[in-house]
Image (cartoon, rainbow, N blue to C red; front, side, top):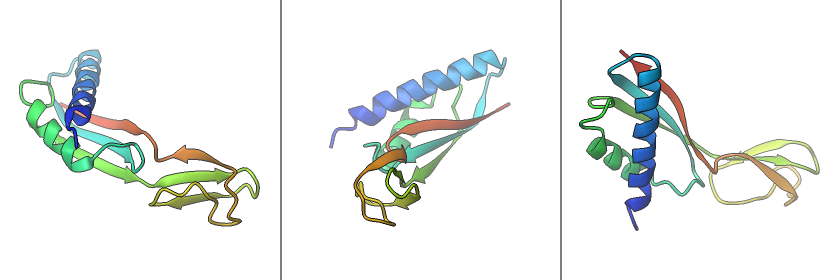
Length: 116
């Protein structure tokens, strides 16, 4: 498994944090909260390691890193119901239709930052 993926994600995340800190005239980020879709392809423990490695010498030095894992959330185009599942199954749990739209669970987001 390549950790380059997580490293580039963390570097982009730290850049976002730097920008937010600058915009708010803050010198220090104390907490970074992310949401990671189970199907985003991001390995949470690798992301954590990469964050801990790269946060030194950045505005996030000493910041707490919080990861919220998001299940796959689907909307059924047939019965109009939403369902969530922790495994990769693009199928409605209510009517078993495969005509579904993905609402959440495939991306990673920066949710909140706490700054001093």
